Image (tube, rainbow, N blue to C red; front, top):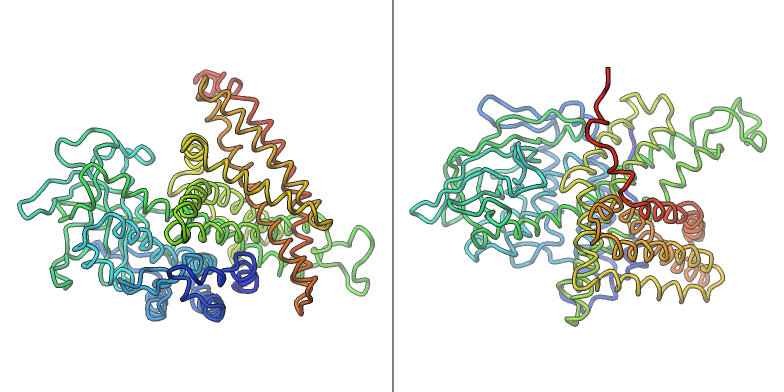
Length: 601
């Protein structure tokens, strides 16, 4: 039976000491997040996820969801009861606006809850998780009437939400969608079409599901410029907020998937369903991107989550499983064999996992702080800088975070040897569940192109230059500390590789766009290495200071410093190899014709 303990100690360190969240108490919303409240949220969320959600993870994977003849869907045993506890405890309200029934606390704490939920039970977490994105889109683009009608019950968890983008003939290229929206005399629209891969598209957890659907109105441009966004409720809602008749939208089937079996990934059929336009006509893609950007950060957290739970189980197994002897001589001579934990190759995989999960947690929560500061920082300059940073980091958190998260999950499965391939240990589920995060909400290739093709050049490169200046400044300061200097020197080399790669793109991408496409993945990983390196430099700095002033938790801070040094030794050198790959260009990659890839009998 797999185990899970929420990493509350590490999370408190990041939120209270690294980010110093209580120091922002002068900003709107942050005043609700006192040190005591922060600790309470972290500890209680960890307890709920470990005790209520985690025990349903493996059973939910085995059972899956059931679609009935009338198109309704039943979630796995225990999910509905767990969701009642989730809703009544108010976990979905933490970072939502108070005016619609939320608690108004920082997004940082909302991200903490998201991580613990996704780690303990990713399939379950996706039901309320998508609602967060839907709420964001309605807050940003909905009319006052739409906000009043839908947001209170979506935030309370009485109703849940989805996003409906993909169709059988189009995924990334949304300009190809065929779903139609015909205007009606009452101001509504009749929505007709089929959407696929709709996570949480139909289920029995809530009284209503508010679908956000992309569709085209008559005469709209046959491209992404002709897309509009619509609210299409599963059950119609009257002007007083009461539920009425069932709308003409139904789950046609549940996709047979590699993982996340406990989540109903649906084919959704809209047959003249009543819908309501959100925002302006033909401006739906911009509205949907509000939802997608929130979802992409959430998916990055899913990459961290599956790495974390796989790591926890691999550590427990490595300490218990005995095979062979330590290379330096028996570690436990009285036993027939030593724990596999003593073997350097096992230790390599475990240290890689520890360095990634703790660094990625810090990066994700720092990113969440930028989301908060985008809206609530004191000055317009600070708000603009935070917005640039999180816009730049979003594809990295999603793309690099899920690439490496999957790598960690498979390496932790490797620690188990043959037992990792056997269902009862749970490792194969973590690998299967981690795999989807590299695909949905924009494949990681799309994330890399978003980073390199759009984000680097925005506002004349202001965002990347701001990030470079931040890292440069912290490296320069850290070099004055003898303990930090090795980490700072290593990070400086990685930053130099990223700067050189950025310059190479500037010199070559305009002349040959394929050079940008061929190197985008490598650049995203270089930036991921630098971003986590910045987090480890900061964590080491805080830990050194804490040890200097005296602490009862000496082992925790010493482990942070040791892991930072490991990251500098073992992760950062990859940046140079990635830059050399990037600078090889696209010539050899694109040289072969299509016929050369065909199998010859």
